[in-house]
Amino acid sequence: MKRDHSGWFSIFSSTLTAVVVGFASTILVIMEAARNVGASPSQQASWAAALCFGMAATSFILSWRYRMPMITAWSTPGAVLIATSGTGITYSNALGAFLVAGLLMVVAGLIKPLEKAIEKIPAPVAAAMLAGVLLRYTLGVPGAAMAMPWAVLPLVIVFFGLRLSYPLYAVPVVVVLGVVLAAFGGGLTGDCCSFGITALEWTTPSFDWQTILSIGVPLFLVTMASQNLPGFAVLRASGYQPPVQPALLVTGIGSTLMAPFGSHAINMAAITASIVTGPDCHPDPKKRWLVAYPYLVLYGLIGLMAASFVHVLGALPKDLITAIAGLALFSPLMGGVTAMMKEPRDIESALVTFLVTASGLTIMGVGSAFWGLVAGLVLFGARHLIQRN
Image (tube, rainbow, N blue to C red; front, top):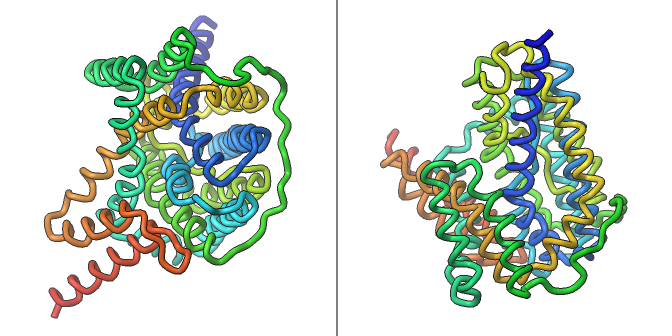
């Protein structure tokens, strides 16, 4: 009996850590993405709530059905893509692109050759597209430090100090510290103390081909390459054999159903999954799937309180938000740059992808992430074709 209580305690504590790290690390990026496509405060709250409810439901369904800790998360690279490439796009058009990205995920789950084709996208090119998207966001940190040195510089020092010993907690601590500094420094603006139950807000999606190519297709590709594939790899590294097609179907359907409420993409978790898939969660691998229960409850509660989080975090000065979000994306950027430079023969095509994506150019109304991927794949294909001949 004592062992059971001990097991449940470790399961709950691991799940709580995963939820706190997952939510606090990039909720500000989600808010920036929502604001960039013109979402109102109530739509921003609905966006966050829809993601939380979708993650809670899909994680529970997959974990319970397949008896392994298959937790899901929102697409952080996808949110950065929207935050950097969504300027001028209407909220309803953005939702249409999200819906298309969700349907593409469903199709990938139904058609195995398509899934295999996505897996064959060269890793350096996929990593370069991710790094290019993230770079545009992290470049805002130095400017924010110049604008608000009294708040941003302490965050930078604390962030890199924690990364030396406790990297997992660096971002959550920085988020909390940022709110505290803003409160004591008089930096909070507007109504930051409005609390209540969050209501999902339906917005009928509209479909625009330029938005679909700028946001929808890159969102699908970056989510597959930078979230789903690493997520499956984490499960395999822990000794599980994840059902790839059912996972794509469930997350794709979840993304599609929640898109009209603001959810941009739900996918397999990678970083937070590593917290609940190891022996620290439970010594028995066959019982780690029980994280589905506390994960369902915790993210359900956070979803209900999403409006409160949006009010508090939305009251932060814009430069402080930029700094916190940029610091939160430092680790993914470092991983993307490392991966894109891993194969010496592919550095050229990866670098072209990176530069085009980071440039922010728009051609025929289509954003740079799409063109960066196209340029990198063309150069990659041409080089490998010539080498074969």
